[in-house]
Image: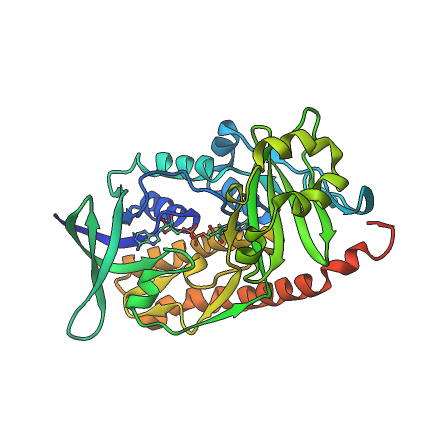
Length: 366
Ligand SMILES: Cc1cc2nc3c(=O)[nH]c(=O)nc-3n(C[C@H](O)[C@H](O)[C@H](O)COP(=O)(O)OP(=O)(O)OC[C@H]3O[C@@H](n4cnc5c(N)ncnc54)[C@H](O)[C@@H]3O)c2cc1C
């Protein structure tokens, strides 16, 4: 199959899907290729902040996502054992400290809104295999495999929005520095007991963070930081002593924990890394989201960063295409716009990681 589009986006996660919508809306012919078969993703960034809320509102997406279901967090609470030692409440004009948005609701809305445009196409179950370059070294398309068949997509610009292990980044030979953070995260989902407040709860367990994110639909997502690469050793022991601090802080979760966390297989281990790519732009190619800069789970900002990338890149790319100037220099405006903030956010994550235990030092209501 041979296809053609102005822009070929590899990866239909939050960043790629929002960019696809914003380009399609402006009349740019756009194809997204996505490796998975639909919009369901397990254990991904699902909390958005006020800035992302404003971006989604600006693009008339927020209300539609809200119709599918979201949950506003009322506060963040820090627990020492059973006691709350610190509380963060919404500031001034806000009515939340973060919103849980199931990724399926976010992606479904953006895809449905995009599909009203005939210049938009999304191909699921399609994996990029090769990038095509012309004799000058400009990227002019991709080869992908869809349901076992080869698909060739010719494009003016390729977007690598294919996440932390980006194939596009590797195929374009863009050097990337990966940083470890001394911890990995165990994720699990359990049902919330009756009357459980929509709050984000943090506990300090052996100097590491245990986070409980309340979710839409009556669930709690657990993000439990463990020593880096310690999961294989942990798995060899019994799960019960490990779960003890969770039950001690939240006795009301005992039944749900015993139902949902029966064995270590009920946890998914996320290897925590952050990364910085030397460049986000080459001739005819742009990296966005985790592909350009993987964030750690600290502060739950990964999804927010990816969505902002798409929001910032869309007008720059649209204008460049309409003016028929997609030079590296022109597209670099996007990187110049975003890189400083991303670097600052990554530094902030490290600061938060190293000072996390200080939040539990004294009784303080913020
Ligand atoms: C297990 C896990 C848990 C996380 N938890 C949190 C959290 O709690 N809070 C938070 O803020 N962030 C979290 N993150 C990070 C957050 O999910 C990301 O920052 C965010 O999803 C980045 O969006 P993205 O669109 O750049 O990339 P992704 O969401 O990773 O999307 C990339 C897309 O590209 C597709 N793809 C990959 N390779 C190919 C290929 N070769 N061909 C075609 N398609 C391809 C993938 O299927 C995927 O849909 C988590 C990440 C992981 C992996």
